[in-house]
Image 1 (tube, rainbow, N blue to C red):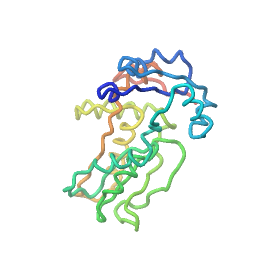
Image 2: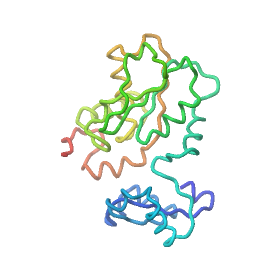
Image 3: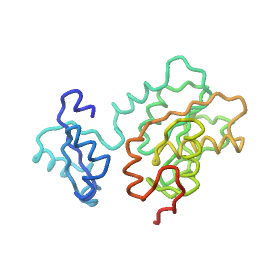
Image 4: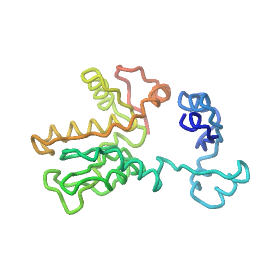
Amino acid sequence: AACNQFGFKSIGIIRGERESETNFTLSEAKKHGMQLHFVSREEYKQKENTDFLEQLKKQFGNFYLIPEGGNNSLGEKGCGEILPMENNFNHVFCACGTGTTLNGIAKSIKPNQRLIGINVLKFESSIVGDLANSPTQNSQIVNGYHFGGYAKHTNELLEFKNKFEAENNIPLDYVYTSKLFYAVCDLISKNKIPENSKVLIIHSGGSQGNTGYEQRYFLMPNLKVKEPQG
């Protein structure tokens, strides 16, 4: 959408089968003029290899590569501008996939603030200890809120999402922000965050993917469904 607005040609390198071209997210990308190029999962694993990139250049010409999650120095620079210059938050939370958002915000966080990333992936990263007692570094990652892994869910997460949206009128997505807000609410309920703290939760969007996610798992919004297998 941004490329379309500013007059750039965009090409999406898609891991998967061409049949997925009809899903909501990719259909929207095509409407905004993105050319879709599908590669196998094995090919996609080589996405950072020089040979793979050279093959793409032969096919599409020279290009500027935006990696997954915008995970490069410019992506981090942009995320470093999320926090306002003047703020008095004690704890700042964000969801973590590639870590771009976390790393960017970490560069602008104040020494007396804690930055906590909620890992939405199944693998574990550095586990945070007692949030009330800041260690030497003031940014860490909390594990255990992935609900089965990336783009996975449980009934508990679905019920939380539905209840939170109904009570607060704030839309969440299934992949990142549902897990983020669940984690923060859970940490508060377990007294892991000191009382009277000022907490900022970075909502990173993602709701445009909800329709495709619901189609994938045969979900109906605001209804309890069985958990995905695997």
